[in-house]
Image 1 (cartoon, rainbow, N blue to C red):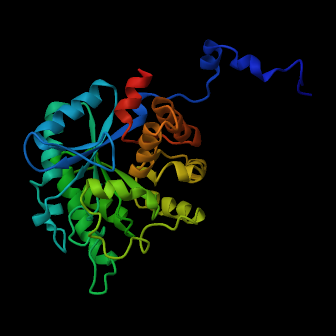
Image 2 (cartoon, one colour; image 1 turned 90 degrees about the vertical axis):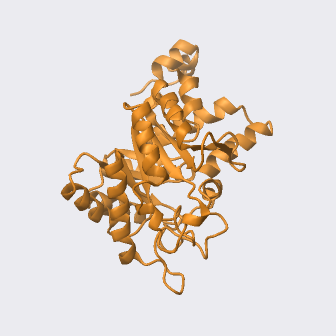
Image 3 (cartoon, rainbow, N blue to C red; image 1 turned 180 degrees about the horizontal axis):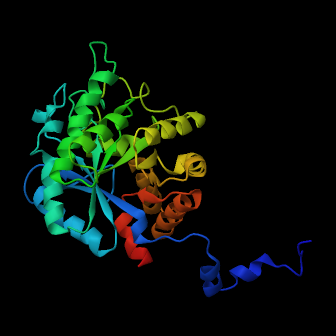
Length: 329
């Protein structure tokens, strides 16, 4: 029979800082974080993103220093997203396959500046399309799954050849993980990992990201025809199961905080490396809340990131990566 009050006082374990530290069930470490970075054209450029306070786009010549900063803090990986120049955005996203595009040049720069850090690249067409969708569209504006997949495969190969360590298909096309895995294997890129955006929801929290990559305002319709319905959780498990069967090494749940239940279910069901993306809207809410005096910024950052770990996340893609790494150093 278990002890009861007063023989068991749960507050004893909370009575001092050293006791709380000794009994903590989950801890944050800089190696838990992946830092998303936005790339822009030009030289010596820093372009602040208005809807993402404290986040900027960086030109190629300055991105190496950002990667070096991350590596010095113990952050193991950066994720790259381009703001493609307007004149290079087309209906068929040809710039995604350019071996000298912003992402490919950024990869090479980072590998020179901080060779010990990992580079994750986004496999999707929305930063390159004139219409803002993640794939090709027909005359009615519907995204064409099977015509898009071969382009995603070529995009992943271009990124792998440039030196990407992880390719991360975020497009939510059916069958793309298997096609990318087969192409990587046959192309001599057996060590390039796939982090599948397996449970990516059609969320209202993506707005600032679309500002960052220049796709807001150009999207015709919405992405609910291929991104997941926020009402569904069992469907997420089916998506994860399919992506793992097709060769994904890791899986991701996106967004983060509103989907902690999905993170927990995925980790419990599959026991595989499970990542979560603390998306731009989540980041912006913390920043705006802190600026308004509604909460203490550092505490909000760490408590939120700890929630992801408590839910079962292996790691977190977060714009607060550098801030958090410094806070827990």
